[in-house]
Image (cartoon, rainbow, N blue to C red):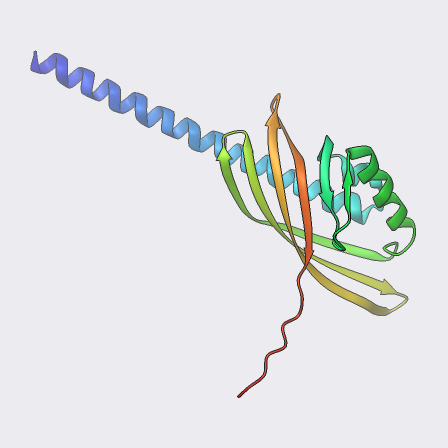
Length: 162
């Protein structure tokens, strides 16, 4: 009887440990894919391709741009970005880094992304700005997509000494 209990006990421990290891492996794989999706945003921006930039977005994604305007849908996101790539941001370079990924459920994540952009005209850097983005991503049919995106400019803080 003790032997049967010992075997059962170890079987449960092995099953729990295996399930935990699988969840960790799944989470690590999901984090890798999410970081790749953020990388796709940067790649699309720097290639000046609205279509490439919009690839990680869900078809019906909500996007709040840096000035607070809201746009909706992958097609609109692609067109709006293509417009700015051909005009005000044609000489820009964007750097993005996923800082935190928080899984609300195995198929929903909140991702905070740090961004910095430089606009260069000729040999002169005209603008350098930083932003923090909040992305809500969902995993549907094995594919991670951005369903909501909030872009906020990071303001310089003036510090005074007393």
